[in-house]
Amino acid sequence: MTSNINVPETKTVGSNLGETMAVPSAVEALNAAIFATPIDNPDAAYLAATTKIDFSDLPDGSSTDVISDDTVFVAFSQPLVKLGPVPDGWSTWSSPPFSEDPNPFVLSSPVSTLTLEISRPVSIFGFELEPSPFGDFEFTADFYRGDTLVESITRVVNGDGGARLFAREDGAIDRVVITGIVPFAIAQVRYQLAPIDPALAAVLIALIIVILALILL
Image (cartoon, rainbow, N blue to C red; front, side):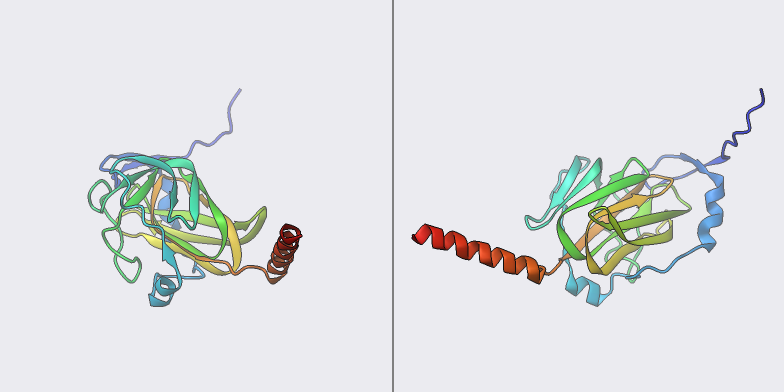
């Protein structure tokens, strides 16, 4: 019986990890399909409005499934490896205005799909991303609040010094799903906490008043 399954053609390319990788050859054609993002680049307004979760003190080469600044925790569905600063362990990144810094520490994902769970709702959230293999590859970041998809950002990113920002604002989110077809690294994870919902604040105040009244009885 003849199979009708088409096996994608692959080619071998260099990578930021200093090794060769087999990737689908068709992805090279995606470089014409660049989409705009809600926040295109890490400009002064974005940097001033957000807080960066600094993971530079993690041991070099160590694996982690969470980063935190003690206010917000970001947990990963797959352990990531801390490398850097570029080009130590990860060869390339982009430069301003496309990135904050051409020599960041990065978190390297061995898989092409990653979920980021954010411990508190945030109204701005962003990160820089670069694929491991050299070449153009499409990535999508889906931003969720609970099970509700709030927004999707799709960009084509070049692995040879082409890191780009995936960031959005307006409307709280607490989860991001990154989907691509090749491994990648992220850097410069930033957030702004979402304001407390007025209705929820009123409920909390009322609850505190009741508790205090019970204590004073």
